[in-house]
Length: 534
Image (cartoon, rainbow, N blue to C red; front, side, top):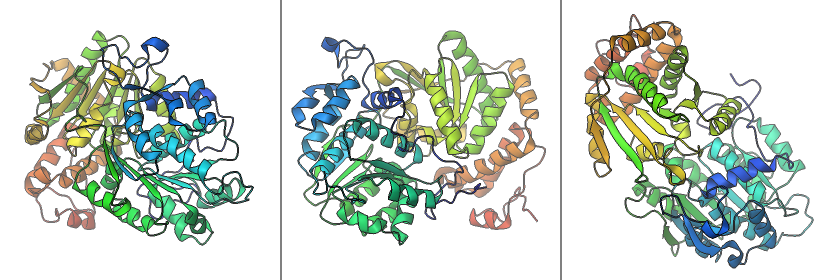
């Protein structure tokens, strides 16, 4: 599977290919870097100076404070100016006033609010002020370490850091993530030393545990940034974070960013932050919720009709919105792949992106969808938090989300930059309990669209042409996902009955078999309807 690439032992997912952008090419198209900055800072393009900071709806994410008031490096100001920015976002103003003073901070901030620049700017200042700045050391210490939950986010962060560093000589940034041979990482670290590392937890720990001198370079660390802490913990990286903290100096500055602050995030923050840290809340209670220009609705219908409903919703939306851009979230990567093949077979302009795709493919699809005017993206939660897609007109969530936060993050793909949009959640009757978790949000319960016999026939015909291996994979993934949902998975007999209805809806003649060990681990070994692989 790996095609010569060796992943870190701690990485959760295996990807074959090297990320498209890893910071090695200093001459990467500046327009790409500028676009990444624009996406992250959430500012409008081509806004006159006197109108800068105003949205069409009268709202604003910009403060009146200008970057040049911060007293940061003129070379950084030059990079921001060339990118078209003079004023900070409100998130940046609230955060930078703390971080540039060298204080530890727990920052509650949404994705797409300018938070990446909010920690990159003090990171660059930390490198400039460090004792190694300006020295001609062959291999300098690592001064700043930025921890990200995913390769996509690490790649975006590195690209933005390189844009901000364009006019700084002697400061380098590198990405350490899975998807590239470990030895290639080592060679790059030796041949092109850097002071800033952007990494995912698994690959970072591989370098720390390897006796290559990397852990020694970390002894010069001055700043630790943990980005999207809630997502890191969702992916099971708590133990990795604890191991990391034991390997770096206690005397450091730590910036801890999270879109939500549940108990688990609070507990981990106490492990990494100074007791006198500052809490910066740029979200507010309930403000994580979605832009009020975005209509939210929920359709409750039998599970076996969900794909037909998706097709009908897409037909209606495409006929009503010329420049449509739709993101469809499915419960798992394999279900995403199945729906993609179904819609493609029905002649829709559709793209596919999920964790089972190689990194290079995910990068390409992400870039194509960003630029697209009329397209549909079928995806899993790999797209929920990371990439900022402009002008999304409709978000459809098929099946119950894992939790409230993920519903909100998925839904946040539409209504960005102050624009309108629509979000539709499709649930089965036995998933309707989830509405209690979002009852404080303006979600309207609506009847599903009327489905005629032609829709049913077309979907069944297209489904019948999809290879059985794809449908079997979707069945296995579906069973695993809902088994993990407490409100559904605790009744194993009912779960298997529901899985069988899903099996029928995707035109599988009989239930696919599962390994005995898998059935045992899922608590399904002796449940009627489960077929054990011999």
